[in-house]
Length: 163
Image (cartoon, rainbow, N blue to C red; front, side, top):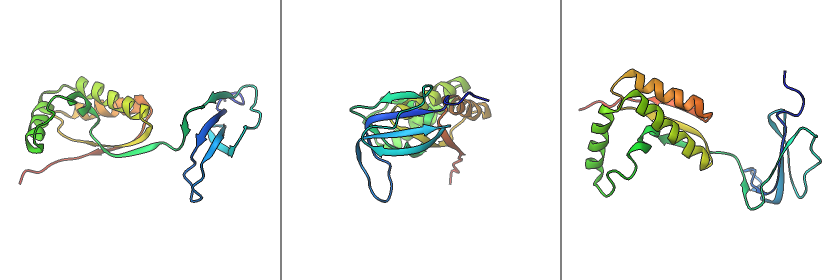
């Protein structure tokens, strides 16, 4: 069991956008997390935190729920800027050919990089549409990267039928 306050956090001085039906914007605002769950949101100065609570000064920042990317191919960050300017069908053919020669470790590293970039951009949940794997270990390595990153995810193993 963790000691009290270990999961406590107060984020303050930021613009808080709780995304409710009331369309609130609290500036400056605060958010209090107690025992790992949001316990209070408000405008102005936050209540005094416990001595063990972490504090984050969000001055100049926005505090809001994480974003969701409902369709991604995480490992394909490895192909960024490689075939820019090509027509879509030509670009897709290049991606398909490249995916056929990637190794499981390439799927791991590309997926992990995709997760880190998503998290840095405020995306906390992804739906990974995973296909073009030359071997089942490629999908397993993508899943390993997703788990290690801590991002929330749905892993959609997809197939394409030629026809």
